Image (tube, rainbow, N blue to C red; front, side, top):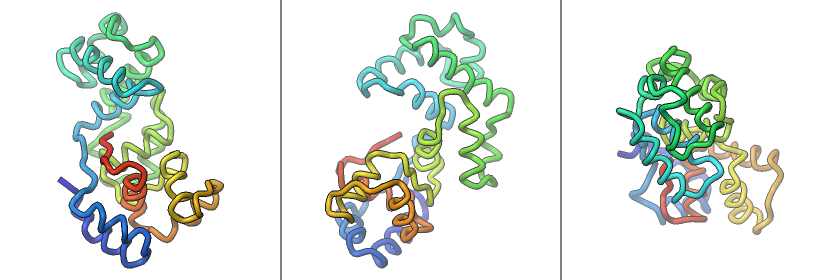
Length: 205
């Protein structure tokens, strides 16, 4: 199910930017879709760091099989030994267990996120070992469906802006940041369309 704001955001972006309008028309009917469970989404992002999608799927399957359920409580209950043999490196095991502890102890509380602005939630997420700003921003876009996140460190976004607006020339981070101001308050949506300009298949995070 696409976010309630998607149609309005797409219309606003198309009205203010002819090149964005081309993408809005090309990918009409598609949009962001949340994968749901916050803990599983974040755990999966940690599992998938620096390995191929195929390898990540394999490790995730073994990780899920090692638990009674994919939940913070199950990870804490499993302990360090319970995750042995599932394909996770020692460091990633530490990261997943730290993530689980944040949920169990209430340091990450999904019930409180609705009243937190983007930067406050990013700050809370990046307190978890193994979660950097880019991962937190992807989570805000793909899981929380926040409408105005602009992930400046994303290589796909950088490339798409350069190709579509600067004759194929990659621009400095500051230029991309300033250029993106034209898409407020829908920068997540603009980013999604720019990703589509590189790869027509929508990404799930």
